[in-house]
Each structure stands twice: as structure tokens, then as C-alpha cells.
Amino acid sequence: MKRLFLTLMVAGFSYVGFSQSCCSSASKADCDKDDMQLMASTKEFQKAHEEPLPYTHVSKAGGEMIQFNTPDGKTANAFLIKSAKQSNNYLFVYQEWWGLNDHIKKQAEVFYNDLKDVNVVAIDMYDGKIATTADEAGKLMSGADQKRLGAIIEGAIKFAGANAKIASVGWCFGGGLSLKSALLEGKQAVGCVMYYGMPEKDVEKLKTLNCDVLGLFAAREKWISPEVVAQFEKNMAAAGKSVKVKNYDAEHAFANPSNPKFDKVASEDAYGLAINYLKSKF
Image 1: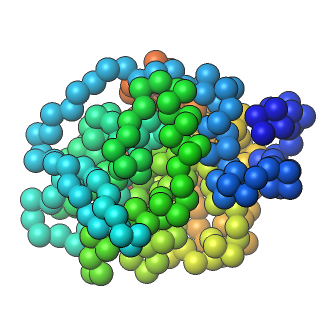
Image 2 (image 1 turned 120 degrees about the horizontal axis):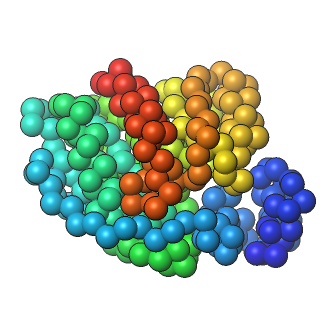
């Protein structure tokens, strides 16, 4: 699988071609994974991610870890910051491939402080596991079960309640999960922000979206390339849905302050677009 993927990358095939070739020769377990999970299993993708800088988050807004039930009979974890006032507005925050670490909790609190009167839920998609090395992150991300990911999101939606208005935001693996979340939220979805996450390419699925999408991508990366992003725009148009995209002259994970390749200028511009977009949805 790894050799096949690298060969296709060198040959310049699109990610669509990669998926088709993979599923024609790989195991069913691999074909149940999304494209970004398959990328995570390669050494090339792992080497593109430097280890996050150490950080311990102490919440000043009363954030705390909670558990909620999931439809598969299990429980899931999340970092919840409740709105100071009673509110049915919810922002779901989706982790990078490292997991729900303290950097994600910090960013969730940044959104909370800027949005006002919004419940912020940073959802743990790895059931308590957190990676500190690229090898660990690759194993967690590539090994994540799609049914379990969906169950966690569905559990979070039920936790928010039937009257909740939900927007989502995520980075890397979480960028794709943010879009998956918006699809599962149905009529409760009011907004979706994707930071350099793999887009859904099934037009029929995109037709079910109840909200528009803001996509913030890194033009220098080879995986979710400008070509992949352009195809996403075409697919959204074919689905009759609205998407606004900005490609930054930056590397993958440019908005992660724990990344040694953090791009402050691009990150601040992207955050400005994201927070203004989210404010308009609540």
C-alpha cells in the first residue's frame, strides 16, 4: 500500500485516482478509510509533520473534560466550555491528527472568547489517545475506525440537543471531520470551517449539506493540493452548495502554533476569516 501510494504521488496522479487504485487492490479495511487516513500511513506524510512543541493548557473560561453517550453503546470524551448565558449555539472543534491535546483546548478557548454566548465542544476523536510523535499520530489517524468516528460525532450532536445550532471547525484530519460533522448535523448545521482537510468528493453526499463551507488551504502542500481544492469547488457547485476557498502560500499545518513551521501571517489572516464567518452564523 505504501509503495503504491508513493508511486502514484510521483507519477502525479490526482487523489481521486489514488482512491480508485487503492480500492482495486487493497484490503476492504483499507478501502473503508478515507484518503487522508491512507496518506497518514506513509512515511512521507509523517515526515512532513514535526513534533508539537510542549504546552499545558489551564482553562480560564471554566473548560472541563466531559463524557457523553454514543449510539454504538459506548461513551466519548470532549473538552466543553459552556456559554456564560443559556445558549443553543454550539461550535464543534475537531482535532488535528495528534489528538485532543492541550493546543486544541487552547484554540477552542480562543474561539470561545471571541464568539461569546456559544458553547464550545472540542471533541476527542481518538477515545483518550494523544500522539506526541509523527509515527504515533500516523498510527492513530490511519487506524481510526470510520464507524466509530461517525458514532462520536452523532453522540456529540445528541449531547448538544435537538434545538442546537451547530457550526464546526477543524484542522488537518479535523478539517475533513468538520465537513463530515456538517453532513451528519443535517438541518442543525449552520456553518463549517475546514483548515487544510481532505474534502468529501461524493457529490451526492454534498447535496445533503445544510450550510455553506469556508475552506482554508495550504498551496504548498502536495496532498490536499490546489488541484484537489479546485475539484472540491467544482463538486460543491455541482451539488448546488456554496463554498468560499482561500489558498495560502504556506505549508500544511501552517495555522498550528505548536508546529515549528507555523506561519503567523497566514494563520492570523485565516483566523480572521474563520471567526468572522462563525460570528455570522450565530
